[in-house]
Structure formats: structure tokens, C-alpha cells
Image 1 (cartoon, helix red, strand yellow):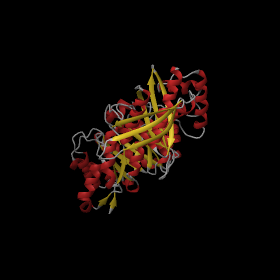
Image 2 (image 1 turned 30 degrees about the vertical axis):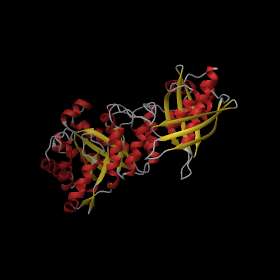
Image 3 (image 1 turned 60 degrees about the vertical axis):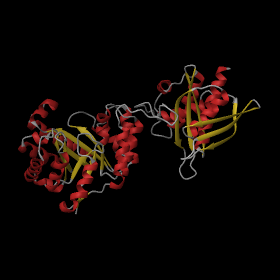
Image 4 (image 1 turned 90 degrees about the vertical axis):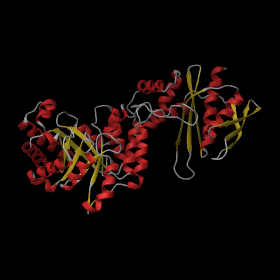
Length: 469
């Protein structure tokens, strides 16, 4: 039985599906999800000169087990920088994409057929010098002249390409036509017997999955897909094909199909256009400032600029403290995201004497009762008790605190994340309260995440009280 390989293009196509750029965290989460599904390779979008792109690629390379494919164009000087971004992957790959139809060659590259053949050969050799696995993607292959297409594929293989992808970029062929097209190319390029042949098929006529099946029947070794609907065959369609016709076609896939539906649902939710994320406490923004990531090379001006974007207005002394803590964290990590920077500000800036102290708290919650919180605070020796009923234990706890202090502060942000792993893992909570047009943050750490959240709220509250007094 032949195992059909699947290259996933979700990361590459996600901005078009979303209608906007992904945050750094979203890129990592998509890569983790695809890796858990056991796709054979994850294809990255073209890596630009921006620092965020390179850091994202390096971070993804360090954490996935699947092959990681990075695209390079037929022209440009990004090859070496792209290679540096993915070389740390367990199975790094470079994908040279080049147009092969007459219109695309002249329109995008200003090249005639002979010059394009020379460019393909030279570029593949350059990629092969750096990387063991080099893919040649023939863009708009179905509208190319067959003789030239075969020459281009043969030139790429001779230069060192170990994988070839035929792209029906326009989606203009019916399944029987696409199967015949693949057979014709295989017959015209005998060297294809020694390399892997993939297909990338536009779903412009809603026939991409059927064309992929025809290509596999004609001898293709793999298909480029996307986990979400992005104009290409989807992972679920390929899983359904092998489930229903796998025995008849003598094919299988290595994909973890039992986890597929749940994973695709998560990715679809993540990529919803203009989605609004909500905490149990109401409309509270959760997540990174899109595209922001810092490293040890960033100066204090760049770091403080991001701190201001997060809503903080700190003194020069606190800015210096934040930057010093940032440098210590950045020295140990590839990057520092906005979540880490939030935690640094919460634990470093505006450290004040505590007005309110937690004496004790009792939380009742379950799926058949309404969540309640009974909290006892100490303020300068005076014991103050509050009881709150809310939509979940943390909401109830915050309402109980508001009852004690007799004031409602706008909850600007609320974040929870793990600090350690295992059953006794430590949890970290970050609370950002807005008062008088300024943002005050508090941080709490505990094995009890509700307790950590209460401590974070009290920490932010103490800063507000100190400033107001």
C-alpha cells in the first residue's frame, strides 16, 4: 500500500483566510496543531526581511517534528536568510517556486523560456548547496507548453531537486484532464521516477479533491493541502478520500484522523475574520499585540514603545527597571512577546506598599450551582468581607472584591498561563485594571489558579490606591 504524503499550507494561506496578519502566538499555535496531526511537512509563507518573520520561522523550526518547508522565489536575494531561519528544523526544506506558463514568466519575471531554464537550474543549485531537500514548484504548470514544462522539471532535477510540485494555479482542469496531464509529464520526464512528485490544485471549480485523486491514480506521491478552506484541497477531504477509496486505490495517509475534526475546528475558530475573544468576565482583550516580538538586541526605546502600546504610562525609573528585567529574560529566550512583557511590567514597575492583604477566601463552583466567592481582606488592620455571585469562580471573586472596595474598575485584560508542568503545575495570572485613563497591572502565582487571579487583582488594586492617595 502506498502512503500518500501531505504538505500543509495553512500557515501560508492563513492571512488570506483571516483577512489580516497573524500574531506571533497564532503562528506558533497553528504550527503546533499541524505537527500534532502528523502532517508530513508544514509549508511556511515567504519569509520577508522583517525580524518578526525570521523569529517566527526560527521558533517554529525549533519546536516541530514535521518537515519544515520555506519558499524562495526564482529571483531575489532572500535564499540565504530564509535558510538561516529554518536550518534549525529537524527536517528543513527549501521550496523554489517559479512560473512556467508563457504569460506568468514574462509578467512576473520578465524572462523568456531559455532564460527561465537557466535561472531554474542556477537557483536550484544554490538552494541545494545549503539544503539536502530542495523542492521545485512549477507555478501555473497546467497552462504551460508541455515541452517547456518537461524541460524545466528535468533541469530542476538535474540541478539537485528531490521533489517536484505541479501547480494547477488557475484550477482550469477537470479530474480526467488533470490525471492525463500528470501522466503526460511523467512520460516526458523519465527522471521523475527518482524523485517525489506532488500536486497543488486550486479549488476554483470545487474539484480540487477529485483532481488530487486523479493525480494520485496517475502516480503522484503527495498533495499540498490546507487544514482550513483556503482554495485548495483540505486535510479532511484527503482523509475522507483514503477512508472511502483507500483500499480500492491501495493508498493510505499518516495523518492522525481521530484528532482531525477537533483540530480543524480550533483552527477555523482562530482564523475567523475580525473575531472577538472573550474571557468569562466580559469583553476583555486577550493576546499579543499583533506582530510584536522583541529580542536581546532591542534597545530601551523599542521596548518602552511596546510597553506604551500595551497601555502603560510609566515613569523613567520604572521604564529603566522594566528594561533591565527585559534584558535578563531576553538573554535566555529567542524572543520576548507581549505576554512576557506584561508579566515583567506587573512584577517590576510601580512596586508599592500593600493597602489590601488577603486573609482568606472560599470559592464554591460547579456545573449545577452558581459560582460564589466569599473573600476576607485586611486594610490597615480592619477586616473587610465581601460576597460575590458571578459567571464562574473568578468572576465571582472579582465581584466580591469590588463589593469590599465599593468601586468598579474597568478590567482591561486578564491572562492565565502555566509556569511549570505536571499535576502540581504553578499557574500565573495577570490582571490589568484601568483607572483615571492609566493601566495598572498585577501578577499572581499559585498552584491554585483562582488564588493566583485574586492575588493579581489585589496587586493591581494596591497600585491604584497608592497612586490615588
